[in-house]
Image 1 (cartoon, one colour):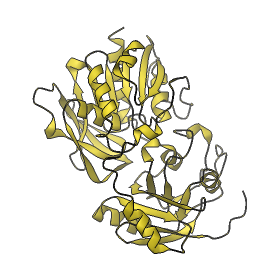
Image 2 (cartoon, helix red, strand yellow):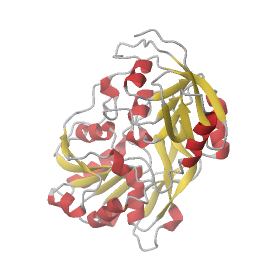
Image 3 (cartoon, one colour):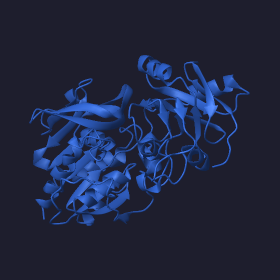
Length: 380
């Protein structure tokens, strides 16, 4: 690792609030929605998660960088976040799996990041005022100009970001989880099923979990029509996570309507919201979103409480489902009562707002994949 010299940096929020720190990544200026995650681990997974596209993510854990970066834990092929904010970071990792230090990784990927930020004050500010656009920069020559960039950036509402992060062409995914990433309670996979995954910003962990369950996984672009999806003769279709507002994804909503009742469907995060919109419900933007690995969700049919990983800024209004939709509201976030899952048994549809593939400790939510695979097996 090369020797670092101190470089000042600044975060300018659209409401005029400024936070100063020290640059630990690339030099430059980036604009994005400033959000925070309460996860205490997984900064590499956070940075490479396409759901963070056009966002500047604040890590609430006090110190990061100690485990470095490795290729095995990436959720996509590059850093997707627009920027990163931390309280303290370590340039030199101390972990047997590390292939690169965090600072070098950020600079190589061209990502602007700041250390020395008062992240507690920033998170409290976001909680009070809501997530807002901000400019992160190593150029302090025109602070008013940085504020202007943040104010001119608009809102996440109305942004179809799934179209910008999706794969350009379909592909077959073979990679299973590593020994460290895999689960041990599956009891062996039987009766392979073919699953088509709509890529709205899919995490590799989702694809690995499907392979782990014995699925033959095929990934297709976000704009794939229902007719083309059905022509591939899948045993089930999964609508993935992704960034941005679900409402502008009219192509995906139309595809969902064309697939309902014709093949088992599962939706995760953005996919959950798209399926909700396809059933006639409405979505809305949360004040500061749910981003973290300790979100409690109650499964209403069983009464069980799951500790889940979540990453979303929009949610479905549960009261907006039409009375004749056939949808059963099955799961709720216990922190704020927002909808966390629904099913439509007549159409063989399962949707969850949380991330069942993520297991930074508890594996409570992983059975969602098992339920989906069983739906797929039922049509073989």
